[in-house]
Length: 196
Ligand code: AMP
Image 1 (cartoon, rainbow, N blue to C red):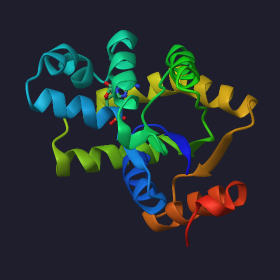
Image 2 (image 1 turned 180 degrees about the vertical axis):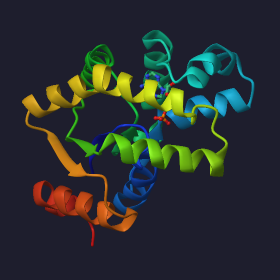
Image 3 (image 1 turned 90 degrees about the horizontal axis):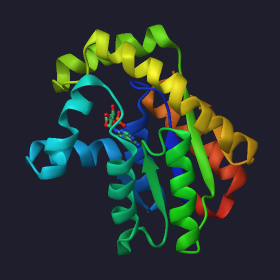
Image 4 (image 1 turned 45 degrees about the horizontal axis):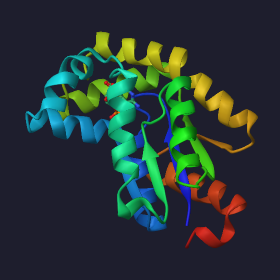
């Protein structure tokens, strides 16, 4: 049973790897981006509040994001482990996650980071845009999201690294290669939690 999260720049395949990992490890995956997109699609009040931020590639304000994550982490299916995908995105969300977990007597076991090279990322995201029609997959927006990642989210990885719980894996291989490397890295630290 693991409590973990995954961090990586837009376009690095983080969502796909998070889905595969949570299935493989038998823990619940929670993607903040997916939850927000679902709200936008269903035209909920939260969806209306966050749509412009998603479309512009901006971060949703911390208040809305933290509340949504707190509600999600209150549910039964995450009691025995979870994989957070896309949260925390900045150091104030990191502090908030610490507070949430402490309040329920839990702590994070590991933070995974996928690393990637910018030119390849822009190429991948533009390719994805033709497949998914995601409103935040245009070249200007992807460059903006990358800048935000380096400014806001890299410091999150640095803080987990300082705590000794960061595992970094090169995200530029094929989907299977990256998945295998993630499993290998996890297995080294948590042999009993990672099935073959
Ligand atoms: P993702 O699917 O993780 O790339 O997230 C898509 C979009 O959802 C981001 O560009 C943000 O607009 C929003 N989002 C997802 N997670 C967060 C978060 N932790 N804080 C703020 N905004 C977020």
